[in-house]
Length: 229
Image: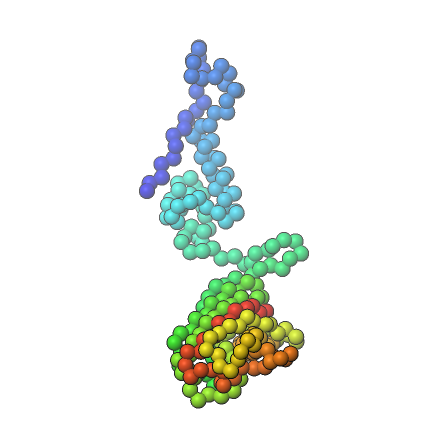
């Protein structure tokens, strides 16, 4: 689509005699000439460029319109690519936000130090905002095999912060979990790790799930939470 600017007078009309469609006094109205119109466009676009915003339209259309009025826009702001910023300052005295990322990860179920390798599906998603990672995942095993030991979901997208007493608790749910009746499930992420230990409440204390809580196949776990990195 070709951009065609509005047509404005090249000069302020002179008033001679009685002209019904013009004001009685020239200073009753601020006349906008074509030259002044272009000046205003340049001033507006300069402000928009400084703020990192541009007129609506495709990148090619925007570039054409800005070039037509002599506005030079940084290359990263006049292409389809997203502009890159060093960080977002949220206010005086606040830490600059320098990391934001959305992605996927593949949850893996381990018993002891061995992965259960047969799954129906494994899905994981996360959002990183600054130094905190929010995540959720779901997996269903097809066959647990001959593995033994405490259960954990491994392969988190980032390693947790290693500072002392920095453990995070996760919401855990599931189906076809054997040997439990009414016990509360939960998970936790220890300091400096990339896995979630799978737990249940055994009376007043927590205990770890292990291979005996898995059905041969079809056991499913759902987990969600956040942790500091």
